Every structure is written in structure tokens, then in C-alpha cells.
Image 1: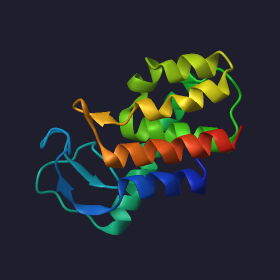
Image 2 (image 1 turned 135 degrees about the horizontal axis):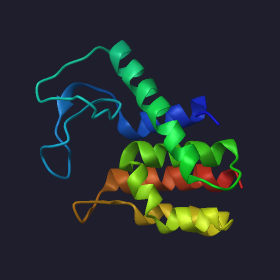
Image 3 (image 1 turned 45 degrees about the horizontal axis):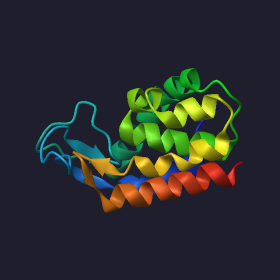
Length: 146
């Protein structure tokens, strides 16, 4: 499965677009981020164009799609895939892999898996309003596809 335009739009709206590298909000430093939340190869002081940000986003999604495909063992609808892609894009495949969300999903309990999104709203132990909103949007997209 591939990430749809709705999935890309969710990531874009959650990440926002920043053309100058900025520090991680939770750490105040690493990882440095740019574009639509890209961290790979980003350094302090780096700047990019909007076109470069778009390419970086699509390259990151293409890199994460096989990881998501390998982790999920049950059939997904497009909205479920897109919500999980947003989750992985933000938190990484390792966090999904170790999560109760994935365990419940792979057991076929889609509704309970969807309810797990809300648990992932903290960075450095602090509740972050942006993460709370993002997880609510992901949950809505995921459960709307059930």
C-alpha cells in the first residue's frame, strides 16, 4: 500500500513547513528538523526551498512505507495506513513496533488500536499540545476507515 494524498496532507498539516532548520521542541537541540519534519542529514543553520521540502517529505515517506508494511500483519484500509504513516513519520517505526497499538492492531482489534493513538502525546515526558492534536487527527482518520 502507498500513502495517499490525504495521508500526505495530514503529515504536512501536523508538521507545518519550515525552510530553516529548527531544534527539536522537546530537547531544544537534536534532532534538527527542516521542511515538513525531515531530520535526515539536517544540521543547524541549514535552509531549503519549498520544492526541496516537498521532495524530502516524499523521500521520507517512501523510506518509511516498507517499514510500515513489514510491521502490520492485518489488512488495512487506506485511512488506517495513512494514519499509521503519520505516526511513523513523527515517531519512527521502532516506537510503533514496540507499541500496544501495533499489538492490538495485529491481533485484529482495530478499535482498541485506534484508541492507543492518544497515549503518544508526550515528548521528553511532557504533554505537547501539537502532539495531542496530531494524535487526535490520526485516530479520527484511522477509526473513520474502520
